[in-house]
Image (cartoon, rainbow over all chains, first blue to last red; front, side):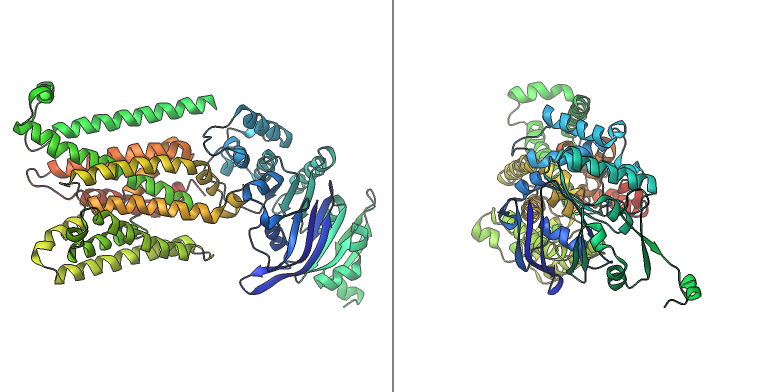
Length: 266
Length: 338
């Protein structure tokens, strides 16, 4: 579905990403992990053409993304970025913005179909009851759900998420990732998400790509990527990797300096 | 959705009604009293009488010009505010009005309008506006945290520079040009040339129509440029088109009426507060509201110390400037609690 070939890009003359190569298959749920500043968000921005690649090509369903119209791209790929600007509008108006790529040049009013799609997506994400509320009055978790509803009204094939669980409590973290998993499983939506929390990434993603200093450090199933040598090398932190007793996925435990010194570990 | 449409239509009709009544009110008030009940005989057979001349050759053109300029400036304000997602941005605070005024002043001093015809006045205003806008645009595409504040400061500085340059022109210009230049600096709806009035009217209406092609894109811009791009909008191209539209509207307004500040700030703000931020209704309501506001200010300007007349820019400046300061101190509310 998505193929990235020799991608090198960055801001001004500084390269943030170098020689990125990977493929994403249909209906895959891919997680991108890596330390702060490693280029995860930059990768998403390159896919959506916010920044131009210096080298390399990105193909979406065999089409070169840079040759596609913005409008066409928006019908295929929806993005949920870490944006706090919500304007001054109700949830319903906010969700309906996702229909913009489908409006014709001289259309000034949503069609019945647009409204139906919007309410379906709001129901799916559990934001329908909030539709008259202002987006800025919502809690962080509700706002993230509204963002997902908006992205779904674009009727995309590929959904990109930039840290969908940042600043959320565990209820919403799990709620949102369960929802994404459901969209992936039941509706066949391909998902690429950037995650900070390694345990959540391990629990929810089929495949992980670990980015470090702008290059792909390791890619594969969670149990291939998340072992303690790799994590200690990339994150420069001492960790213990255990197995989650229920899901048998890798689970990363942190150890404080005090405990490390007690045990005589550096 | 249907409810929203009805709500919008009611507002638009109400604003239209207000505009009409202010227009009529303004037509019949002034230093020479013309009673309302003489209007029908005047229209039917009053051609040539003094009253007819006052009504249709002095007051009516001012009202039409107030409609055009007020509408155009508010529209430019809405467009710029939508693009920058900041309610303090408008043609005046970005220095675009100043640039246009400088262009017009240079035209007067070099007597270009005598050589090239009266149409060169709006053209030079437009050129001045677009030069400033190009400058502002090049600043805005450089990403930075203090983007908007920096832009506003820059705009104020551009206004300063252009008004200083206008002062310089005043100091060295011939006495017969002085009146024309002073007129432009202070802003007035007194415009003897019918052609320019008709053109201003046409430009502002056209501007309104064209702005509607961008209403959804402006809505998307309220989420930020990157989000707008994710919604399939060619951000750079849209920004360029909107900048050109705003500078045509401003350049034209300034070249016929001089610097009239803050209309584009006050009006969209109040409209947004009462009707909401959706540009489908914001554009037309701001236009109507701006037209009413400027006609009202102009009526004040010519009656308050009648038979003498104040420049209308003074009134809008006092009203709008105080609101600007208030807005700065209450930024939260004005940004919708962001």
